Length: 392
Image (cartoon, rainbow, N blue to C red; front, top):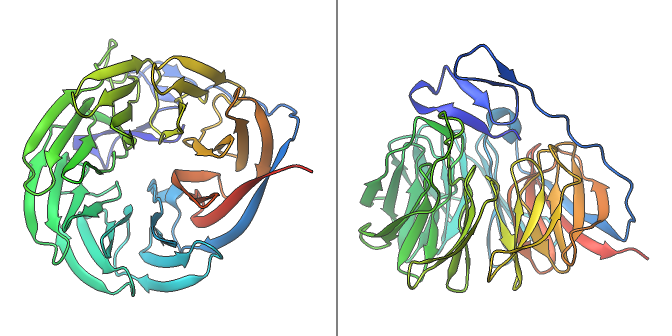
């Protein structure tokens, strides 16, 4: 995979890759990257159709290591590029509603809520934009780089910074209402779990120490703080347990994935762990009424029963192909790989039933499912709309 590991005090001088060649702590031995699995012939039962492509702007999420996901409100998508372009796009036809060029690069985007659009920067700035026009409403400077999309609800914009701070700002003017902080381990994945509003009164955030924290949305007061994953291993690399993907809320249950940890189902009401399964992942997870779908770190796609956590099926034909997180769509689960292929898996048994070359380095970050289509950024910086059709 291409997600980076970072020694936080040495951000500018030391960067290693989680699946690229890794130096052991001694600095003498190396672990070589496994070769990606070759693509096998499949029975092509479905086709992937690209409905439209929108060029969001300059700057590559791959070269800058920013994972910019789109946001949506109603039928309008909001997308940003690393060089500061922000656009509103009609989901139906991909036509632009507005586009603004900010005077700063963007590293955390796009957050939406109420009537504002939110973007964050490498210098810790967060900007609130008018959802109808793209006009800048306010700007606030926080403690460090913003990698996760902010969110807004009930007049509060919630922003996570890479140094472990979570801020509550006024949606109206950006004024700070509250802040809380959690210590970040020395070694961590480059990326952050985005804040998730639950029950209209709380915000939940995952941290690189395996903890999941819920805070009061209005005051920032801690409601609960639960360890989802425990470190295991003999050195700092092996003991990493980063919650890098945003938790997924289904009904009254939160599903959380941790790198080198597990996928866990947490009951919100009782705050009890319903089940936990040893599956390591740092990409977004997806779900339907029956299953949870995960791309595990080495490239296996796994379906777990939502109620029990038992394995329903595993698909291991795409190992070491740097898979995106899965997206559930109708009867299928969609993932993409480093070569730009989109793979369609059957929800029934995990078989690969369709494949198409999308290009652009594949899909990047969390995708949006809306009215039967998937909307996602590609690793080359385009916003695309795709659907899956039965082959005739």
